[in-house]
Structure formats: C-alpha cells, structure tokens
Image (cartoon, rainbow, N blue to C red; front, side, top):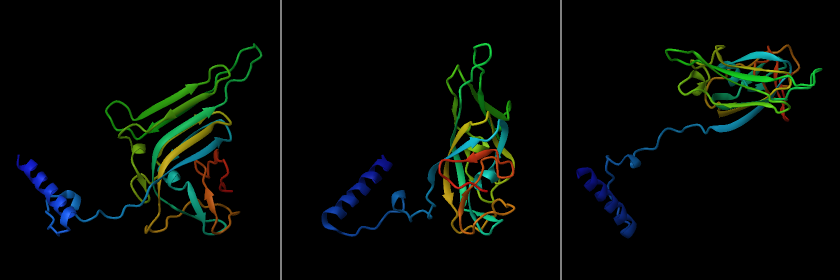
Length: 228
C-alpha cells in the first residue's frame, strides 16, 4: 500500500504542475527524474555481402570483424573506423547441384560453425544445409545465446583477437550476408587495420575480406571498394 500511495502522490504532483504551473520539488525515489545517463554512441545495423572466390573452409576472428571498414592512411597502411560490432545473423546461399553424367545432380553444402560456446558438453555449434536438385543450399543462423559471438566485440577488448569466432564452408560462388550492429570510433585511440604492399589511396574507405585480406577468399562485393 505504501508503494501505491507514493505512486498516487507523484501522479497528483505532476497533474498539479500541468494545471497551474507550480514548481514542485522532485523526489529522489522517482527513477525517471534522475540525471540523464551517459551519452551512448548510436549503433547502426548494417548488412555486409561477400562471395567465395574458391571452395574453402575459412575462419573469422573478432579482429577481422572490427577491420571490416577501414580508411587508408597511406598506400600501405589503414586505420579502423569501427569501435565495436555485434553479430546479429549470418545468411549463406550456394547454387544448386549441376547435372552429372548419370543424369542426376551433385549435392552442394554450405556450413557455419560457431565457436566460443561455454558449457559442459560442447564448445561449438554447427549449422548446415544441402542443395536439393537444382534448389540452392541456404542457411540463416544467429549466434548461440551466451556464446562469445553473441556479445559486443569492442576495439581493444577481450574479443579483439585472432581467436576464431565462427567458420564458413562453401563452394565457389557462395554468397554470404553478415548482419551486424556497428558503432563508429569516437574518442578511442586509433587502431591499425590491415597492412598491404601498396595500391591504396590515402583517405579512401575500403572494405575488408571477411576472412581477412591475408587469406582473401571471401571477397566483399555489391558496389563496395574492396582492399586491393
């Protein structure tokens, strides 16, 4: 009853302010009238699209995800512009099987394996799909709840390492969509991105390969400038 009476009293006080404009002292018990929270950077949800240049099993780390968008600081060096990222989902498509000499079709498989799962019976979780006839192989997966890929990966944080967050497996031409929440760098110290032998233009924004430029198999496409 005490809580209910306090709530009614606050409602009456607010209504009095609206009626006659009288200033009423705020009570410390009203959490909605405390000082505003610290400024939080605005996250944006972005869909990145890639394509396999060769059939291969590729791994992806937190450091590579934070380096998906970089700015060239010279012909050979880059700096990150992503301060934090969080994976929402990954979607994969691969073309259906082609005809064989016997008149049938070969099966095509795409697979995604999540790592960083901490429980008593497994440390990874795999999702896969196989083409049926000429129909594409297709999968859509979200990070397992409570796994390392399920959390924010921030620049200089514990997940900003080369440890594998997930792996992708597919044939040539496999299309991958990675949907992430991203936060741009604010007042963090500049963090270096990939270093190349040359060919970049200072001040230009480049998109990284999903498996990293050194591997260079899962290439960004759909109208973006990939690292040379």
